[in-house]
Amino acid sequence: MQWFKSTLLMLSLPALLFVSACGDDDGGEDPIVPSADVKLVGNATLGNIMTDGEGNSLYFFSEDVAGQPTCEGACLENWPVFFKEDLQVGEGLDANLFTTVTRSDGSRQIAYNGWPLYYFVNDAAPGETNGDGAQEKWFVAKPNYSLMYALAQLVGEDGKQYNGNYEEGPGLTPFITDFDGNTLYIFVPDRNGISQYILDPATWPVFYEELQAVPSILSMEDFDMTTDNQLGVPQLTYKGWPLYYFQQDNFQRGSTKGVSFPQPGIWPIANTDLEEAQAGPNVKLAGVVDLGAVIADARGRTLYFFSEDVNGESACEGDCLTTWPVFYREELQVGEGLDAAKFSSITREDGAKQTTYDGWPLYYFAGDTQPGDAEGEGVGDKWFVAKNDYSLMYAQAQLVGIDGVEYNSNYEPGQELTYYITDAQGRTLYTWVNDTKDKNNFTEPDFENGNNKVWPIFETVDLNSIPSILNENDFGSIDVHGRKQLTYKGWPLYYYGDDNQQRGSNKGIAFPEPGVWPIANKDTAPAQ
Image: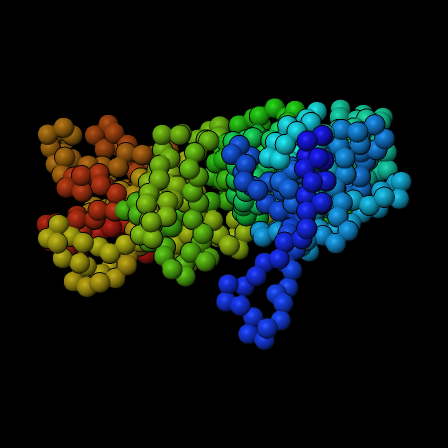
């Protein structure tokens, strides 16, 4: 081979001395600086690859995942081993990651990060990489691979051998590992970018690494990142499948015990034969004991509304976010029973995005430790589980009348956050001081042209869900000129026309003067 001839020629040349340009003050001889036996060389197609001192490409073999050379006999005719007695490592390579392994015939071989190094006989000149991808087993050696492609016999936690179909039997199966040779798995119930694993995350730790380089058999475009998992942490995905380690592999390179746990095929290895993971909702309805169906993320973790967000912007900032982290998904996949048109997103003051439902920003509660928990319900009389069927909501905001004056809850000028009832979209509901119990004394029969245009009645009477701070028994309905009007503690409920159906607007509290049209809240005394 051409490169063997070049090597012999180089060995016949006298050693070169590198002399300091500044000379040697003590008149002594400058030391001999050895050339590197292994170094990084730029390749136009493959980037920086590892070569020997003459620039001949070095390779990893996928069957060497366990750290021992498996290329023996006739294999070595095409893939000669790389070995140097006193290895000199070039710039950009970590000398600590180079080791020497003893082969079955007693000879020695250099390994990098546990992967034995080889030449390829058909590389006729330095810089050639004809062996990369050969038989889907051989890949140019790189120091910055984030992943590797392995080929080995699958041996489950039960000690049995399995083939690529997870049936008992011998056979080499390819699979993706991290660069240290630790096996990566997928979970069959998972969906595209969504981890459905909800048991013990210590048994199946999530895998994440920012990818720098992958073997040429893999495509960087097939990898992505998700946080839709039990811990809400970054997790690498392959073809949409979230990737995991198996704890009982004990980070032993080449171990594949997870393929049989808890039974074969539930946790397959990841390889190029995988089909794209099926899409699934990343926001859905989930049942919660005593609260019914609530809006949850893909993992079933409960989401919440904040009463101070009545105007559709997040009022939870700073330390509040430690307890109430925001929920956001760039590409929202909506589950059955939810109206995709009601989901949107806002840009927060810090520039971050947040998903909203019906105008209400969505949050998690840090005190919820498991999917289905709803410990945040009613906290501070401000936080309520998010639902798609609320007929009413409970808001908290500064009252600002049509006169532009800020009012407190006593309808006196002043700054104060006041609670009040709104419809599901955050539009303020009022009572009239001259009404009596279950009696509308205001509305004229002509709904279209009469005073109903100034103070429209609130006609929703079928209460599906209400925040837990409100008592369903306090609501009723009355007949008003052939239409149904909702009442609260006997008080008929109205909108104010000049609020213009704008969420959070409460101009009516000052019209025609403060206190004539109070807002409705849980402190409202029953009508007489």
